[in-house]
Image (cartoon, rainbow, N blue to C red; front, side, top):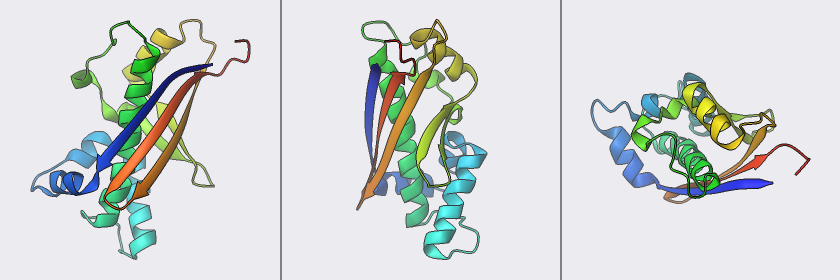
Amino acid sequence: MILGLGCDLVALPALAEQVGRPGSHFAEQVLTSRELRTVRARVKATTGDADGAGVSEAFVRHLGGHWAAKEAVIKAWSTSLASAPPPLDLDEVDWRQIEVVHDHWDRPSILLHGRLADEVAHSVDPDGLGIAWHVSISHDGDYAMAVVVLETSSFND
């Protein structure tokens, strides 16, 4: 059964301005070390950049997709709560506790960690039946977007 749906759109030029500011640590504050390695590997693969570091257009494009997915996760969780207040305020969210991972065929999925994983499980899966996240990330021109569906993984519904 579908519990929640979230969608987010990221304007890449605005994101590039934010991460390009001197001293910006935005990427390190929202991406896990594995996500950061993945983004840098994609930059290297698509641009030939030796180490995939820096704030290139390709870096911002892939960062934007991950950021959109993380925002969409929060929206999907929030819609699953219906009229209940969110267990966490947005300023309490550690964005690195939402991780976008890719399988061998480059299909994205979501892993939750730490307090966020506990809060989600407690609020939408108190019986421990299991939940599943489905995510799609897309890029076009100056935008990256993601759609996330949160559902129970139990087939007894």
